[in-house]
Amino acid sequence: MRVTSILSEAWRNVITGTARVPLFAALIALSAGLAASADITTVHTIHNNARSYIDAGGATQYILAENGVNTTACESLATYSAVNASGSLRQTADITIDSLPGSSFQTYEVSTGFARILGIPSNGTGVWVSHEFAQTLGATTGTTLTSEGETLQITGIFDYPDDGRDSRLGYAFIVPVPEDTGAFNECWMKTWPQLDDTDALLHSTLSAQSDGTDVAISQLNKSVGAHFDGPAQFAERLTRWSPLAAAMAGALLGLAWTRRRRLEHAASLHAGQTRTAMTTTALLETLAWAILGTALTGAITTIGVMTLIPEDMGWAIPWPFHHCLPPSVAPCSEHSSEPSSSRKPICSDTSRSDESCFSAEAQGATRATVDARAGSVACRRSVLRRLIDIKQEDEDWAF
Image (cartoon, rainbow, N blue to C red; front, side, top):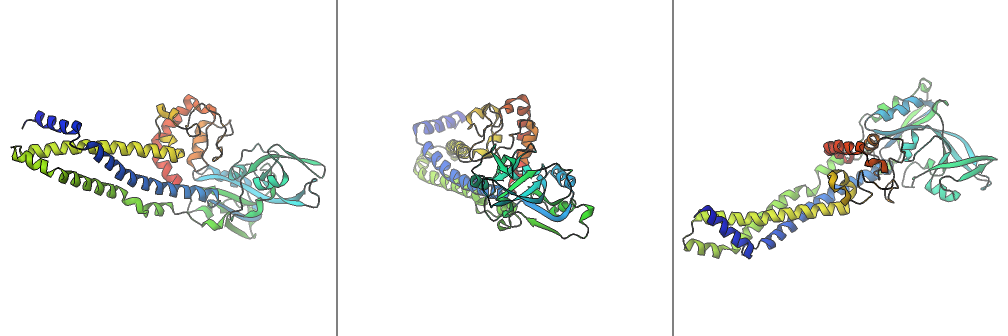
C-alpha cells in the first residue's frame, strides 16, 4: 500500500469522525489537565506557604545586646544577596498623646533600614505606627498628633497583626533616627532564602561595647517554626507522580481506542490490507487526537494558571502578550502605580531604578504593581534578563 494511500485513509477517518478524534482528544485533555492542575495547585500551595511564612515574620531574626549593636554593621547586612532588609532598634522614653490623657505608649527609635523590614517607604522623618494602633488613634498617613505640646506626624503605617509575633511594635511609636546617634540594642534581619549562618551574621553586628553584655538571638514569630523546609515539601509532594499518572491514562485511552476499532481492523485485514499499512494508519489517527489533546491540555492549563495565580505568571509571559494580563500583573504596563488590595508596593519609591525593583522582588519582597515608569526601554531589558533567570529565581523564592 502506497504512502499516499495510507495518508489519505487516515485523513478520511479523521475528518469523517471514524477515528473519534474530538472525543479522545477531550479525554486526553481531561486526564492530563486534571493531573497537571493537581500538581500546579500543590506547588502553588507550597509557594503560598512560603510567602505566608515570610509575611508572618518567620524569616526575620534579631539579636539583642544592650547598647551593643553597631548600627552601620547592622545596616550593611542588607548588602548580602539573601538578606532582604536589616535595621537597628532601641527603646526610648514613652510618648503620651494629649488627646488620650493618662495613656502612654512605648516608643522605639530605629535606623532607616528598618523601614524595609516593616514594608513601608521612609524618608527618615515623622513616626510610624501599625494599622491596629492607627485605628486606635483614629489616624492615617499624614495625621498630626500632639504630645506635651510637640507635634508628631505619622508618615508610615505598617502591617503588624497579632499572629504570634513579638507584640512590642503592635501598639508603639516607631521613630526613624540617623545612624550616628549612638549604639542600639537590637539588630533585625529579614532573610530569604533562609541561611545556615544567620547567627554568625547577626553576631557580626556587635560592637566592642557588647563585651560582657548578655547576648541573645530570637525569631520575630516563633509560632511558625524556626525553618521552612520548602525543598522537602516539594520533593515529597504526592502530586509528583502526576506525569506518570497522565502517561498511564494516555496508554489506557490508546488501548480503549484500539479495542473499539478491532472489528474494523479485522475487516481491513480480511480485505487484503497489510498489517504494516493498518498499523501505520492507526498510529497516524492516534497521533491526531493525541496532539490535539495535548494542545488542549496546554491551553487549558495556561489559562487556568493565569486566571487563578496570575502573580506567578506575569514574568513568564512574552512581551507582546503583556496586554492580555491584568493591569496589576503586567510587569511593564503603562498603568497607575497604585497597588492592588492584596499586594503591597515594593517600588513606591520612584527614585529607585527598575533593576533595583526587580532585585528586591527576586530576594523575596512582597510582589506588587510596578510604577508607570516601568514602560521604558530599560524595563524591557530588565524583563529579558528576568526571563533568562526566572527558573533559578523562582526556586530561590519558593524554597
